[in-house]
Length: 332
Image (cartoon, rainbow, N blue to C red; front, side, top):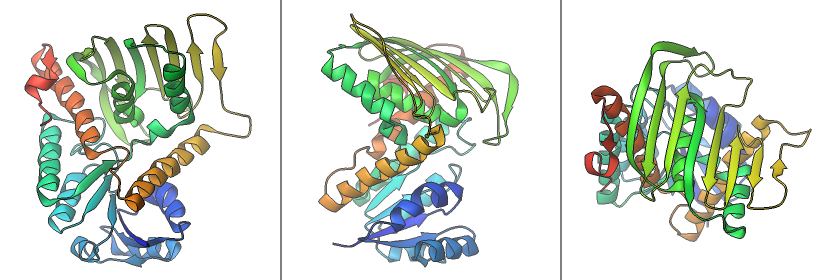
């Protein structure tokens, strides 16, 4: 049965990582909306779809799903209007809400995201998240190693993260280690600039525990060099250790015995090739769920759980104390 997919926001991410894949799907009919009508019209011409003048027109089209790909500063407003317009399924880019940008998520963003998802539940709208890093090859290899080699539970996590990857990496920590229980955080007094993502923000350092008893530390910065690996995550398990590096870059897998397994990109591939492919995998898995009437592979609640970490981190910085995530920022 044909699918009607509304692409809401037709900026560089949508046109580079979403629309080309969607346009190749034989059962997908596309509609485009953008705050700048000319941009929506141009994207529609490129992908063979139609353009909508207003969000209300996009909702009235009754799409099977709407992909909310607008800037994170507008995501809550746009998502709420689509829910109120009766859209049945909404797929969000990350982070779910960030009114001041992805490097400056605040407590209010968590509250706004929670209210939006509550409205979606009340209106019968199913929500989903992109979190395409989960679809990286090295993440799939890590999950397979954990299961097949019986690595056991996560004991410790350490992360160095460029803010361009921040919300994705917080999601990956949850993906492997489960929900966080308590967090204590600090920030530097120096504002650093990332020209690549147009962000000014202080460094953030945090220590945390998980609900499963693991401990961890993360450092977030806008000051890492763009040419260097944009993140590194080390996961120490009961019977193994895994290091993930960069946008589907290298992975090291250490077991209880035998040699270390190291995988890296083949010479003809770049991290940007892998990054682009991960969008197709994420979106392809989502479309398959829509076609089959199954729940999405990554529900919208996962986006709220990432914001829960951000909100607790900000409160810890502001008040200089440990913050209990479940007690102070409950998810339900």
